[in-house]
Image 1: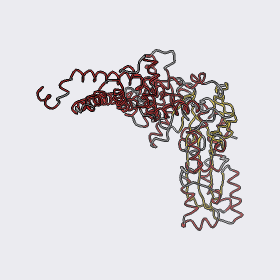
Image 2 (image 1 turned 90 degrees about the horizontal axis):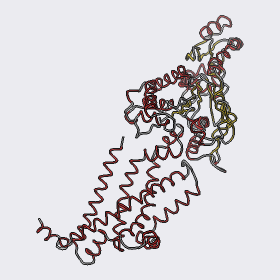
Image 3 (image 1 turned 30 degrees about the vertical axis):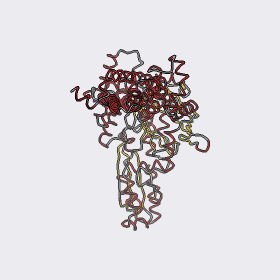
Image 4 (image 1 turned 180 degrees about the horizontal axis):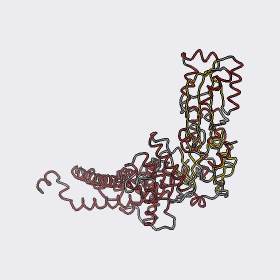
Length: 226
Length: 385
């Protein structure tokens, strides 16, 4: 078995510890980045939903401002966003290199993307449910918790799974500018040193991470669907 | 006259909801649209008040002013003597459990079981979860669907879902139940069973009911009072027998003919070649009466007294609140003067006679105009602030 690996993966077989370290770094960036990014994105998405025209607490001015910010940030290529956010990163983390530092731009890119996804997902909820809740005497907070977030569970899980692919992509790019992780490994080792097998293994591990996340989300969605 | 006593028994009780000069407008500037145009009406305790009209007539908007889901642009909404139209949202919340509502598409929460749907309005009430569930079970029994307590809404038929929605509406011990096209998505048989349930709740719990519909049959089955709406205005209102006896608008007459299937007979008489002779003779009349049942002997009287023969072409008798409501299409034959005398006699015994040429019917109940569609669209997308 190990001989076979050495034949097919000559370079990787020499640096397995490095591969596992990179995998850990990627998981760290992706999980923390997604957790913070999703939490903030959910709040922003709800704000968009509530303040939009016809929303529960319609506020055209607030909506237009949030809407523009989301559109602008989403339009900035991630690699440039990282450069732009370097000051913010130093302010928050104290440094601009390393996996911790990379979480800042990952969150920065995830929040507007995820917020828009959440807004669109929750727009699919039948307005009749909101009306019935209002007619039952439920207030705005009740409706957010008990109608939007509760009835929107499955679509939110769906867009979370979708957005996860983006977070992984961000983390891979972040790795290259000093964040470490599988992206870094694939480029610095695999691409720059012509060690194709390293690139291949890094890709496979990233695919496994993505697939596992999709499977978990699908199972969760299925369980909650009635 | 005798009808008035029936009116008071039918609409017994003190005023519960009073709408006074209600106006609701949507949009701004040139897109400004008046969905409800100066409507005043009083809903008395214990009554079943029907509001009928075509799509886009403003009836859904009107009913939403009663629980202030829709704030009126002007006018006052009075509930149990208190002006509620200008209350803050937080003070309206507990009130909405007293002015409960059910909908055309039931609007049950798909992720919750039937039981959890019914207890949902109680989340802020000072009641233990156990008591809330016990109360919900009791209501599910009342509406006849207790065996489905653990099911999810998607597993239920439309009629079953509406029963759950009724239980949810009842859990706050409401004084009035607003029904927004509550039977429009149901088949005729289920419609009848839901209407029977509503009538039962009205009689057993003294629950006042406001019923929005475009189906006259629904109104005839259970309503004590009726308002007819068109283009945001109430064009006719009163106790149901009053309205049937003296419809004051063209639209009301249309609804009445349609509900008695008279529209078909009228259309045939007006257009079919078979009846060309009667049509051209010009003596085809729609005779209508409420309560008297007089039309049965009318033709014999017409013949004996005036020498006028009547050929009955089409007829229908309904019973509304134990009162017969009859309509017949007759072709009268005889000298002109005799026919005039006969018509005067009909009037004297309380039977209305309308010449065929003056009858207007619609081919279908769903004659939505483009304007009506636009109205519905702006009702959804806009508010009036």
